[in-house]
Amino acid sequence: MRFDILKTIYLKEMLDQLRDRRALLSMVLVPLIAIPALMAGMGVVITIIEKKAEDQSKTLGIGLKINSPEIRQAIEKAGLKIVDKPNLKEAVEKKELAAAVEETAGAAGVPEILYYVDRSNPTSETAGDSLRTILTELKDSKVRQRLREQNIPETILTPFSFKRVNVAPERKMAGAMWGTMLGYVLLLLMFTGGIYPAIDMTAGEKERKTLELYLSSPAHRSEIVLGKILAAMTAIFLTAMLTLASIVFSIRNGGLAGKNPQMQQMLKTIPLDGHALLLIVLTLLPLALLAASIMIAIAILARSFKEGQTYLTPLALLVIFPALIGGMPGLEFTPPMAMIPIFNASQVIRSTLLGDLSSTNFLITTFANLVYAGIAFYFASRRFEDETVLFRT
Image (cartoon, rainbow, N blue to C red):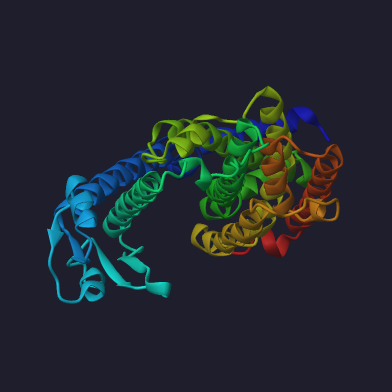
């Protein structure tokens, strides 16, 4: 392997990518522009939906069929408008009411209060939350009042107290949330970001009739293949890093958590220190090499750029399932699972963010992906040795 020739091929391919608007679009513009715009748009939409639901829950009205005037007074005091409807449940279903409260005969002569909500409707869900708070406070108030009338201390209601204590630190909670989505998005965009460069360096060369210049040069076929794979790998890895930076920035500033303070805190607590970032980079490098090798091996079979897209688009779609499953909580990351490509990288990213990555699983994942990349490189090299493949037009 002559490194000066390899360097020349690599630099030539990288220069071609920088001149290709399609490659720049998938490699740079999508992570840096499309993702922040999408996240910002989602944040705006979430804020609008929450505000609209809160306003409509007060203006659309609450239906009542109750005997207790105290409940009516408590609802009116909370600023909710009361509207009379003959069939409360049907009115909520038809969105004529935000929610409704109905009193029925319960067991042992104790009234049972039903409140109807449509949980598929944000307005109704918001109104239902308000009603639950109102009814709970009113119930507690009446119980305390009756205890005082009977000269019974209120402490009788609480013979003991209990409190759920979450032993997971804040960083681990944030890691659980980030790990579920980050690996999936990174892996998916890695593969989609490498499609155009891989096709352009293979089927695109055939269409432009420039592949013959490569083959007539002093470079060996293996050097040509490796140079193209390294250039495609650079594009894929650059896409991953830009995507990571873009996602972190966008989620922290995109308002995706709405008004939920716990979710806001978790989104802003990014479990990415230097050690975690290094592990993610070391995980993505062999995977980028594997992706580039597979794409070059497949794309060289195509006779045109369009045909290359037909071949590689399903590959990007096949990444979705293992990447998504790998980020799901509750799965135990075992050494045999660390040998499953794509899935293993997603699991490593999740475990890294959680702070419980096993060195054994990390090493197996890295070694397995390097082996798979070597196999893909072998097949890509064999394709470049086949004249019937290279000159298919």
